Amino acid sequence: MAVIEQLIRTEEDGSLSFGNYELPEKKKLENYEYNGNLLKVKTYKDITKLESNENFVYESVPGTAVTNFKVNENGVEFKVEGVNDAQITLGLMESTEYSVFVNGTGIGKMSTNLGGKLNLSVELSDGEPASVKVEK
Image (tube, rainbow, N blue to C red; front, side):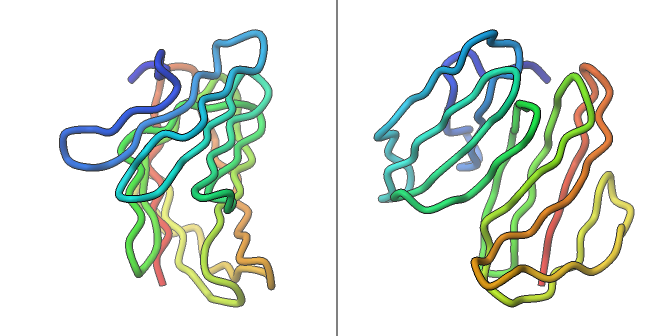
């Protein structure tokens, strides 16, 4: 897996890929149309952030590359890659409990706060993607 040179793209299976953790300075792309929504991505070595219709969807510190990002009524799943371990925040349903899996291993149940944000840490090795699945 590699960084997303065009910052964001729609894959053949309908999932999203976004982020470029190799950029030394912040770049952003706004008004990317996806399933009737307008997306905005900001990304570089220190942070990657995705918004949909000005609502928070994803943020990682430091920056990451995300592929096969799929959201459904039960949660979200994606693959993530970066140089260092990442703190990831996801925008989900507020005050809801989710089961979190990294590379197929359950890391426990986590609840979102009143704003619907869920925080998790993912151990990353340069060039090796980790799969993340969060479901109700």
